[in-house]
Length: 572
Image (cartoon, rainbow, N blue to C red; front, top):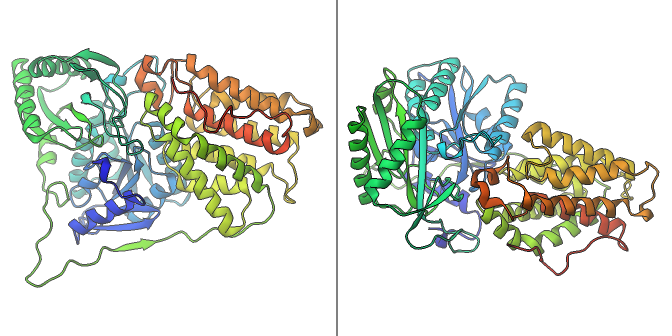
């Protein structure tokens, strides 16, 4: 499918297409992008808002409407929505008893939904969160990120949608959601990786006759590669693993058989029968067996199994009627009636122009990122989902455009672009760093002092730690930022730039970034692939090193470290 995405505004265009196919059900807000249900049940007092990276359809958007969600925030492909999308969608959809966020446990989603929730609370809007963390493949004591949120999100959204239409309060919905999550576990396998929209080729290679066991919905490699068994044996193994991890409880279960994008309905229906037989043989009652593609990973050839132990009344919530794209065809039209135009709107006025500051850093960083984007993408494909290079380059392009149109200085443009318009994990975290660096730029456009840069780097490091929790050794961008900040802090406050303190900081950042290749990641998406990440330097840490290289190149050109050749970053 990724062979035919539009070259520009692919996610917005797809959102408009969904609204076109379901006229009367959905409206599209274009800036920031979110979709909103037009026909909410009048008994509902709490708005349900969810979202995540695109490429998982029909997840989230398919359950938009009566019996489902009030608003959905789609990020770029495999990248979380940014906090402004979530904040404005929630504010627009909020009802008398507030807003409930349904969040998949991925770092970028968690951070951006947390920031949006803080903004909503500041506005006086009650908000609660249900965090979905059902993927048993990532249930490891060695990981600080915990289990990923995957296909059980569908179960949570469907049950909460029905309960919300019955007038449940914010506290009741939050409690129900957390109980459903606690009683749900998922596991996924893949025979072929998804097609990368960037390279238009499989994101990773599998040898003939093998499967990746424990893959993620963003195309992350499995926790291990196994010889491909017969399908019945594979379903038996997955069922055993699910039941070993599933908490004790009632014998009635909901079984979701989910395709990852390229698995046919024929296969999914057959797997559903195999799963039902396995559950029955173990004395369980699969009262709901649901095959279909609900949480895709673009066009990955694979499937996941989700089991949820059902409490009293949950089956009724699952079968409650809905009016959503996932279960309804396009609404019929009267003879001669045309399809109404897709409602769109735009909000958020352009930021007010500012003057002063250092534009040179923005231009230098933009040039460097353009040179290394493809290699950053390849590195990220080895340890994650391959979106980092595009996310970083897209944010820098937005910053250049913002600076050109408004006159805002370079680091401020970077901060505003990454905080307000770049999703994923990297967007808000880099935005926080740029925000603090912007404070170090003198208003007259002159060179910043070493003391100001040291304070800014330390403050950026502290902010990123508060939001994401990463520390040196977790194999994240912090492994480059922390030594750079420490190097600047060690310089005397009155050290002139001619003594090359920025060169020293850049060298420290480079050493820290390259050292991540020997670390087993504990945070971020790389933590999900285990030993597959060993030998691969963290792309975010490299991007931080490139930033300090750009700073040194501007202010200390005689000593600044340089890329060995245009675009050169070694890919293992």
